[in-house]
Image 1 (cartoon, rainbow, N blue to C red):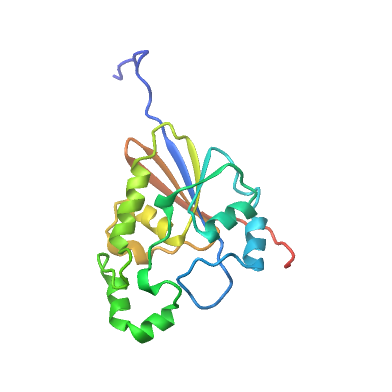
Image 2 (image 1 turned 90 degrees about the vertical axis):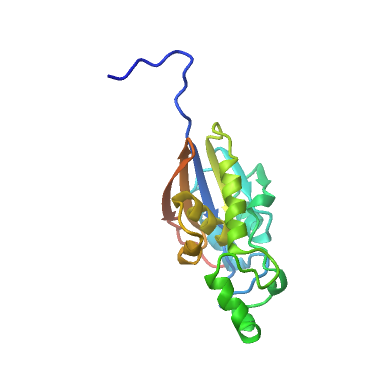
Length: 205
């Protein structure tokens, strides 16, 4: 038999957190750089305006991609969070995967297989997973609904933490641009839901 709840007892509160992966430029080559969104990427972000409701607290990573996505969505009162910044690529910043493979194939291979490897001198996968996990666990229990525009690496790290998965799973998680990762947490436990935004067609600029 369940005992009656005393008046001074409160039910555990749930944090409802939605990560939105930032829009991406339409270039074919993957370059580790923080370039502003091009016209097509902005158009896709604008098409998502209104689909994801602007409720609760809104955060964004400090990158041009993330802040540009938030602006294109028309979100206001957005707070930049340094803890949600992209993976620090060190000496590889500004270079494409093909360029890195041609000059540092062994370093690239270790980075893609060993979560503790940081051949570029920046952050390892282990470090970004620790950083994002710390941010998630520091959210107050009364935070309510939270939205955050983030880079793909941050969304991946959040999924790894929510599932309690090994860090090697980081590279097996694909979070497309303008897709969402939805987490709900109560007493330290996170539940996961992923869904792509149903974008309505908009004429190209």
